[in-house]
Image (tube, rainbow, N blue to C red; front, side, top):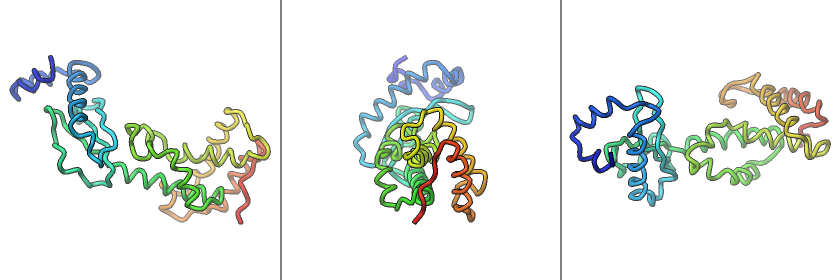
Length: 218
């Protein structure tokens, strides 16, 4: 069935077919892909749209949808976008809350562990601009902020002793440094008072096994 044939059906007929859809396969996948392509052709030039994708269908409370990543904060909306397009639901996903959340983590972590000023962190963050703004389909946010920040902390801490430390060493240090931070404090870490001096001591114990140490704070 083509998308045009699907659209021409009556609502009761479409609902009868929906009743037989399977969540991991079936005609809906091709129909949704074509609907997404048409939606993209019509709306992709909107300045507040960063990415257009489509959903998987995991649970009964969901439905196959066109996903639109927007350069907005929740609960802001691009009001001129329809709620449905070619019968499929349109879901707007605002990305700026996530972007600011990650930047806040990085500014704090890099300042406390490496002594970086905020401007330096923001320059470093430019390498992740597409991910932060959801232009990769939000895959970037499948990992937490530490995933991106702690490898930098570890490399800087090992620079003098192991400038080219093997991946296995860095991965082990990553897990242990992460635990040294998360074993105390809230999530996100700024929600309650946090003893960064004690955290640096715990991290330095971990790093010392590989000959590393956090830079001294001035």
